Image (cartoon, rainbow, N blue to C red; front, top):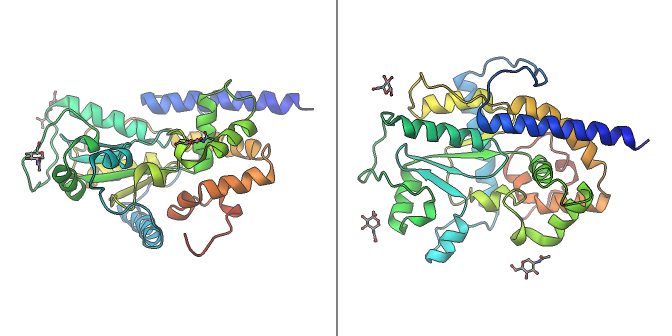
Length: 299
Ligand SMILES: *[C@@H]1O[C@H](CO)[C@@H](O)[C@H](O)[C@H]1NC(C)=O
Ligand SMILES: *[C@@H]1O[C@H](CO)[C@@H](O)[C@H](O)[C@H]1NC(C)=O
Ligand SMILES: *[C@@H]1O[C@H](CO)[C@@H](O)[C@H](O)[C@H]1NC(C)=O
């Protein structure tokens, strides 16, 4: 009885891993991917409206939470708080490097644009342009960090924390006997010991300190990234990596239900609590964890 579900699970994991790879490499062609429903084109107005809603929710979360909202004075503390924040000093972009959120395709795109050499972004900066090689924000001095946070186009990629967890599990397949024990290890380790893959985005990306201009949602990237690039002033004729997140989403929906059912009620509740900030700060309407969060009034 248990054999068939496991077999299906293995097949789905393989498909998801394959799709994840294609997302990373910006692969072409849809031959192996399950066909996603063709969504109607997203208008610029709708894109901007959705962005307003996401940022409004985030601001509401930040106004209630005690999350880091000031740049720390000490260099060590800044390095800790901003450890996942990257910049492209050539293209004037700031983004959070959170694994398995779709930002891999974005980073690939920025790298390609930087290599091109003649792509520039029409942006007025209140200081001489840097053209620094380093991409880690915390490596700059406090004055520069503040200037970059104030002037760069800041982009955040977000994804349902439960899906991020599944992605982390798939990458470490074999090191945990089951998903349930993998989850237990994450819960036992606590927030501070969490790996990049399982750490809540609110801790990783500091959205209350950095006022992101764009909050990009996994599952909609294919439609949203084009608008983002045009708004940011990048050339129209660049070839976008093919974001396959819409298809990946289809596999993950099924996977999520399977793997969620392997968890005990206690684990489910603890996971909701573990990711309570992400679930409050962002709208993951289909997250299996959302329903379990007994929405506390104070964070
Ligand atoms: C940038 O360089 C590419 C070739 O490297 C060329 O095809 C393109 O026309 C150039 N664009 C501008 C705006 O100069
Ligand atoms: C910060 O770095 C910039 C660029 O490297 C430099 O021009 C500036 O003098 C530095 N400021 C301080 C306070 O060290
Ligand atoms: C988590 O990390 C702290 C130190 O940062 C350590 O004291 C603690 O034992 C760790 N907990 C687990 C369960 O690994």
